[in-house]
Image (tube, rainbow, N blue to C red; front, side, top):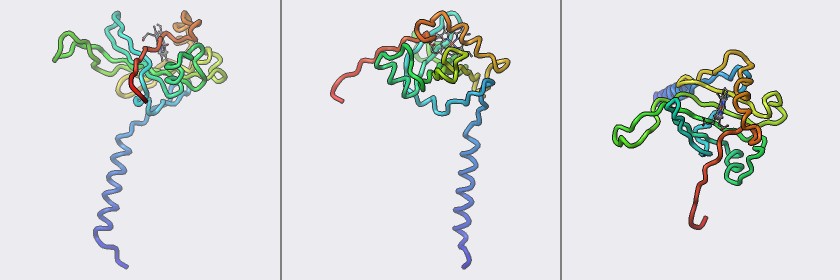
Length: 175
Ligand code: HEC
């Protein structure tokens, strides 16, 4: 049986939608220490936020579901295996509609700490990785870059190497 014109038209349209979707999904290279980019981190919940006054940047610290569960119940010393913390940073600027407010501007980077006490023994149980800029370019000179990360996080060894204290969220009403 000869296929009607519309049949080919539909197939072609589906093909076009498929290829444009594939183009819009960015391929992100793994970090030099072989950590895959945690796809979907931008949907995680907030652990806390910070404002660095020495380099004018704003940060939001997000957690995957395991990290959020730990953060909201105060089980963060140590953080459980499987917890991932993501720190996203933006340049800050003054809001054009409200000069009293400092708001995020350009996206600078996102970096992660992935808790796995067996896998990441050489960096105290945390896998470290950072991706820079809109291109999400893996950061670091060689595969040992994470030694620099853990070195700077060592002053907070007694808090499982994590600086951030989870912010307190007050809820209300019946669940
Ligand atoms: C010069 C010191 C320094 C270095 C180097 C450093 N960090 Fe941090 N990091 C901090 C400080 C201070 C904070 C908390 C304050 C803030 O919000 O920036 C932090 C926070 C974080 C957080 C949020 C969890 C936490 O500990 O509060 C992540 C994730 C993180 N860093 C990842 C990395 C990664 C990945 C690297 C290496 C590529 C790295 N850091 C290197 C100082 C450092």
